Image 1: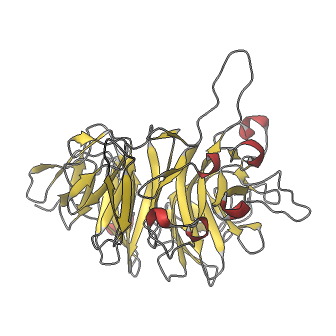
Image 2: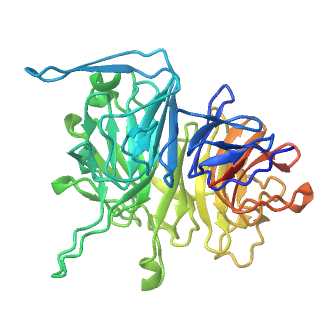
Image 3: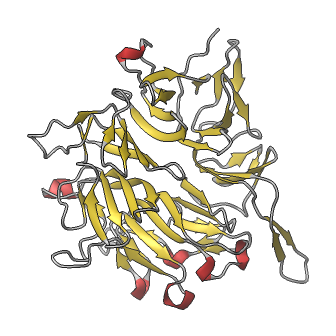
Length: 454
């Protein structure tokens, strides 16, 4: 019996250099190739027709929404006594570790609040976790520091603003994180809680865990839904995207917005947002994914938005920001479709290709380009960062909402909602959520792996 692929949810995916693929979501079991039902809760290693359980998974009705990996994770030990403070020591590690985040409060049968470290098949707690859902996890490979983003305001008793890092000893408040303006009306309405959906780390290294100085820690780009970054006199306007520089201000650290600083642009119109009517301006805006291209020093930004900086007042959910010229630009003419959304951006190490995935029907044009046909694209396409051309992968995956991608040579792993194959492949539409492979060389799309059920 050949396994079907009908995934209830693939939200996060991580492919290692050795070809191993990890998947996370809100599934609780799958139907193996022999027809038997195997219980696996929200996190596992993808095999040809099966899923290898990692630990005992997480509690039911919860999800794993972010995955990161360190090939050699530092080992930190905490020794405490009743008469003195705890002594923490960290040494270079030899074992790989997988770091996960989500909405769970139980992992491997023990209380673990929304984050866990998986080493040698064991799921371990990280201090006492965080207070609300984690949507992004990024482990800094050269230092072992792990960064978490989400919708939380507390990390094991430390006040934070939806983003923090754990260095084996301390939670970093990162200058207050990100937020929305406080309200002052008599109703006592609380401000909206900021959300960080994506984290990208740049630079840093030459140290281990909490021994890292501010200068050795990476710059941290965060994307999500927020309007401010920092606190007090160091607060800046930062619409849905911002950068934390831990070495700024003599090591105190500072947040900055991504803005076009030269005339006619102004830094009070920064980041990404909506433009147009007051109703549009009040619409939700999100940054879901970030990707960095070292050769051009460009940061690519995907999400749900209609403007970037001041210059680009009509731009559909995909933009680029030059870290050299500090300016925004449109990517390859843009994307289009009914409410186009970019959920995933991916650049393979050493690659000159940007994979763009989400929910859109055309590339090489925007919704405002009424005279341009663009190229038909089924929710996934590849943009060449050298030639500036698009590859639509033979029409992509129509009627889909792709949430995550991973690339293995000529094969693209796609996970998300309602994934259907294109008609040329001759495979029946798949229901709800699915995981599929796109063979770039032929454009052939096929289902793969086990069938997931809730």
